[in-house]
Image (cartoon, rainbow, N blue to C red; front, side, top):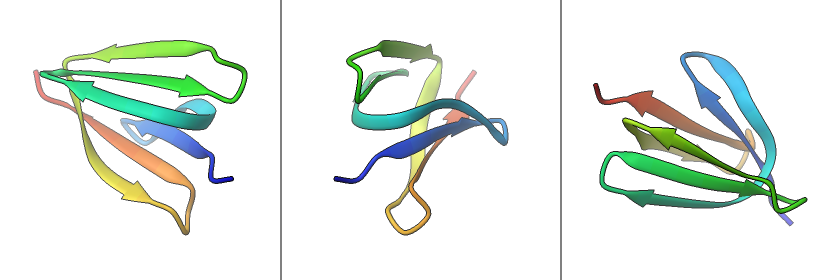
Amino acid sequence: MCEFNVILNGKIQLKDVIYAKMEGDNVTVKNILGEAKEFQGCKIVEVDVNLSRLVLVSVK
């Protein structure tokens, strides 16, 4: 399985993420334990499977 580290402003915000959904200016992610986190005012700018990272950027 492929788990990602969610990165915002150069810092890891959440590890072991297996789900991400972008709705408007919000991104919701869930990790392997089912814990969910919503990033408001953000969008996904990069998904890198080799480095296991999902990069967000603030849009506001």
